[in-house]
Length: 130
Image (cartoon, rainbow, N blue to C red; front, side, top):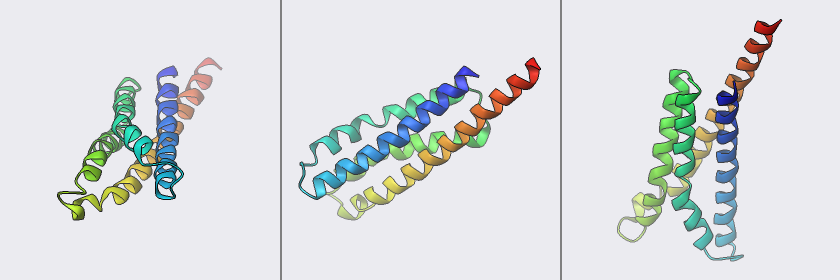
């Protein structure tokens, strides 16, 4: 049960981190700061889905949740590369915000599934002890 709760917490922390990343992009866009914080976080962010994927394995999640977690990791890993392509291939770089939407959807979906899984585990544990 603890493993599933940790999985859910990690997933929701990633959703929060994606929200912070979008805020940092907006801060750069509206000249509150430059894009440096957004860029730094963007290169570090793929570590979180890697941890989520490891916790998914430890939590024994279902196949679909595992596949969504893998997709989230892949989408997050290519995200900084899309931005880096802006000079050589701006058409590819234009997919950076589109991929950000995909990352958010995947993060939200995996987090919801993780929460449901943690709740199910808790209910099963409570039923077993009754």
